[in-house]
Amino acid sequence: MTKKHKVVVGLSGGVDSAVSAWLLKQQGHEVLGIFMKNWEDDDDSEYCASNVDFVDAAAVADVLGIEIEHINFAAEYKDRVFAQFLHEYQAGRTPNPDILCNAEIKFKAFLDHAMARGADKIATGHYARVRQQGDAVQLLKGLDPGKDQSYFLHRLRQDQLRQTLFPVGELHKSEVRRLASEIGLPNAQKRDSTGICFIGERPFRDFLNRYIASTPGPVRDELGHCVGEHMGLSFYTLGQRQGLGIGGVKASGAARGAGDHAPWFVARKDMAHNTLWVVQGHDHPWLLSQHLQAQDLSWVSGHAPEAIALAAKTRYRQTDAPCHVTAIGPDLLSLRFDPAQWAVTPGQSAVLYDGEVCLGGGVIHQASALERVLPLAEPAPRPRRRTRQPHRA
Image 1: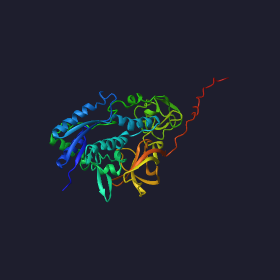
Image 2 (image 1 turned 90 degrees about the vertical axis):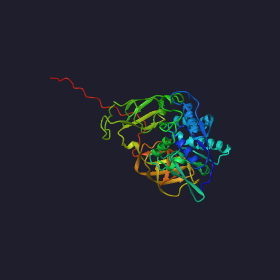
Image 3 (image 1 turned 120 degrees about the vertical axis):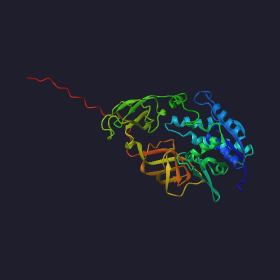
Image 4 (image 1 turned 30 degrees about the vertical axis):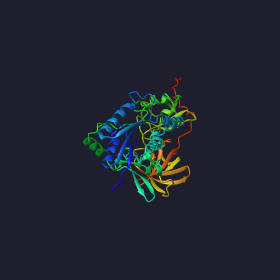
C-alpha cells in the first residue's frame, strides 16, 4: 500500500497542475495548493496578469475541495532569476530563465516554504518522472515525448528530487485534458502558457528595451558588406530569422547556393565591434556546430557522468542528438556532435541524456561553427563599373 503524505502542490492556474492535485487526492494524500506570485512589475497589464491565473487556481481548489494559499516570491525571483536574465542578455547571450526559476524558486523557495508548512512532499505539473535507483534518485523524461520537460529540471539535486512528485509525468497531454474535462475542472480547456512568465505574450523586444539600453550598429553578411542596421545586439539570438529588417536585401556575392531571396539568419553577435553577422540559408555552415563547451555544470546524481557516448539537447524541443564527451571537469564540459547541430546558442543549456535518464548539464559558453565567422574588417571595395570612353578618331 502506498504511504500517504502531506503534499503541497504548486497550483499555477493551468490544467497540468490542477490534474496533478486531483491525482494526488485520488491516491489518498493530504493535499494543499499554493499559488506562487513571481512577478509584480506591470502585473495588472494584459500581458502578465497573475491575478487571472490565481482566480483559475482558486476555482480548481474549490472544485477539488482543497485549501489554497497565495505566496509572493517576487523579491526572490527578481534577485535570483531576473537579475541573471538581464546580465546574460547584456553580455550578448540568450539565457533560459525557466531553468533558473525551477532551481531557485519552485524547487528552493517554494520547497522550503512547503516544508515549513509541514509537508512531506511537493508536487508540480511538470511532465517528468522520478525513479529510485538504489540509494539515489533519477530524473526521467515524461512519457509524452511532445511534452517532456526534464530539460528545464536538469539542475535539480538529489535532495530536491527526493521530496518531489510529478503526477502527470506518466500521462500524455491528451489524457490530462480528458481527465480535466471528466472531473469538471474549470480550466480543462485553458490554453497552455507560452514564453517567459514575466514577458507573457508581449513583443519581446519592447520588454527588453525597458531594462537594457540599445546601441544600434551594422548588420554584415558573410563577405563583410553592410546590409542593414541592428537595434542593439541584446535583442537578437543565433538562428533568428524574423525581425531582422533585411528581408528584401539580396546577398552580396555568392550565397552558398541559397539563392538571392533565401531567408536571412543571425549567425554571430560580435560584442566587441557591436556587429551583427547574418547569412542566407537555413543550412549555412556558420549556423552549424560540431563542438561546444559548457560551464556552470550541474549533475542530478551529484557527480559527472562516466559514459562517453551519450545524447544531448542544446535547446528545448530539440530531438536528442548523439554526442561524444571529449572533456569534462569541475566546471567545463566539451561535447562533439555528428552530425553538426543547428544554431547552438551561448546562454542556452546543453543537457545530457542516457536514454530516458536526464543526467544534468551546463550553460553553453561557446560553440564552434563548421566555418569560422570572419573577424570584423572593412569589406573589400566593390569593383567599380568601367565607363565607356568616347571613341576618338
